[in-house]
Length: 192
Image 1 (tube, rainbow, N blue to C red):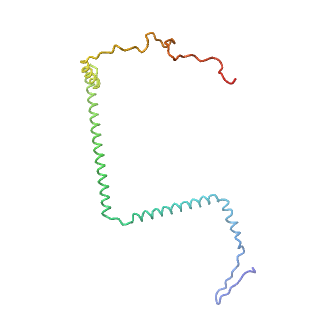
Image 2 (image 1 turned 135 degrees about the vertical axis):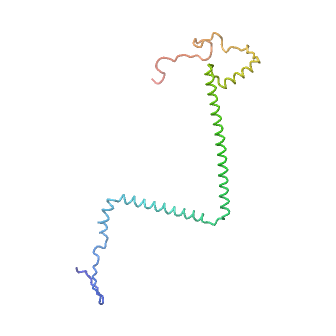
Image 3 (image 1 turned 120 degrees about the vertical axis):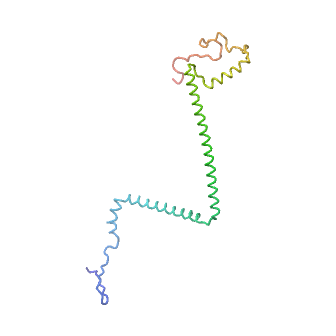
């Protein structure tokens, strides 16, 4: 090659420098061009994904920095202890209320079950003796009827009948303003 340049050092080895032949970067077009043509969309999506991940991590770091600076502020230890004790007391109070409600509910459920059991026993005993069973509701009605039977109520005899005795709705008589008539037969009126 004619372009070889030799540099001699004083007393050192001889170094040959060869100037670069293609300094216009056309070699990148030959190597990177087919790569981008084949995997261009994948590269684009990968770059967008990396960008989104970096943005998300930077926001997260900023929010963590703010929260750590807020929690890192100097707090009075006595205030923290008081706040924790107040939280514990309110939790204890709420738990006691819940326990009381649960106990009351269990008691009511036991009473209902006992009443049902007593009803079943009464029904079984009455059926065993051969008489029909009448529930508590019927016996309560019977006692009310007995108390009201002492006061005799007069039936109202001055009632006027709603319609005359000869009224028959199917006959079409009876005079009302509502009379059913069948529709007209034939083609409907309009446009022709």
